[in-house]
Length: 281
Ligand code: NAD
Image 1: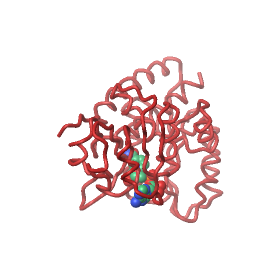
Image 2: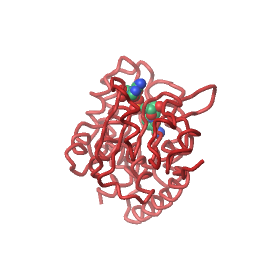
Image 3: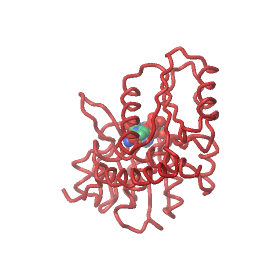
Image 4: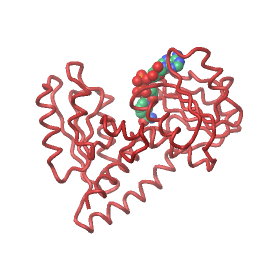
């Protein structure tokens, strides 16, 4: 194996130490950063994510609240809950755990969150700010992925970056962030022709597809930075979108799954919540 590992656990641990220090400093000024997570229904994967977010908050000394709503909650009741949290001065970050039950309108619910409390960065205003280069809240997973890319110490300006996947949560904001770093960005998706021709040009390759082992070593430029966002459950194990073994033989830097980008996502949520609280003092 040639590639060096971008260790999400290690980066997260040192970032969380810094977050905890800044939380203590805020508490001395009388402000405890607070995150509220709304979970509608009982999806087992969502329940685990929500629990991990609460644990993350406690670890760094933040206040956390989980609001459990029934699977059949109405749109009005969900939005009333968001409205209540918008007014709550102890809460600096509001997160609606996605996906919502099918009958609910996700877009309308997210639009109700005050943009300054939108710590997921999914509100249209924050998405627009990211596209136009204005300061705003950056979605947690791409923010964590960019942080890892920056830890390679390479100058990103002018590098060829290829992002696979165009979701609003990962692919699109990732592409916008890399563009902001002056990379030449290609955004690939399910209709892209000759995918490997694009990926083989990539100095930075970000895979956010949702297909285990989809990117193999022969699709990677020697010396590339490979960021694997995928979380796929196969035979009870978590696997990324990148075939780690063949990719690590050609890449210079690579993120493992588990222990890579996934570890960074909650840390960046804590970071976004901390920054939202800091902006109130
Ligand atoms: P999504 O299903 O919304 O998007 C997947 C994207 O992949 C789509 O834009 C689609 O066009 C593209 N795609 C599908 N087949 C393709 C193909 N054959 N060639 C090229 N592109 C193709 O998924 P998402 O929400 O963006 O998540 C992607 C992956 O990242 C999933 O495995 C998800 O579990 C994971 N994820 C991880 C984290 C984390 O914290 N690490 C956070 C969010 C999502």
